[in-house]
Length: 121
Image 1: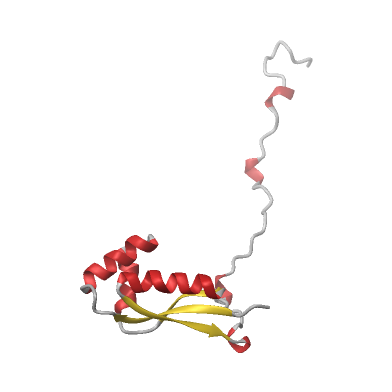
Image 2: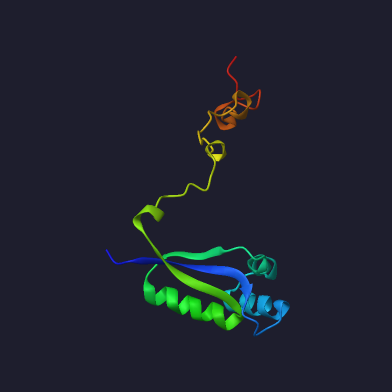
């Protein structure tokens, strides 16, 4: 199996652009809204992409650096490959099909005699 990498944004700007301009460039380059791109400038590290090969990670890093954000590529080790469950256990919905309500089933009106002349009393 080939090595997998993750791209991490450090939360700091390179200094090439002002913060607002760097956020706009990032939002335009990666087609995200500016609010989401603004979260990357808070000073904390954010993993932008996981489980990619080295050439893809390097291309992504270059695109992020061109936008004015500092970032780096980190190799993922086997102990970092654990599956992360994003949902809580309570969020799973049980999908069952209910039987129809008693009042929802209507008898077929075509089978009934509607006129009193048609009835054989």
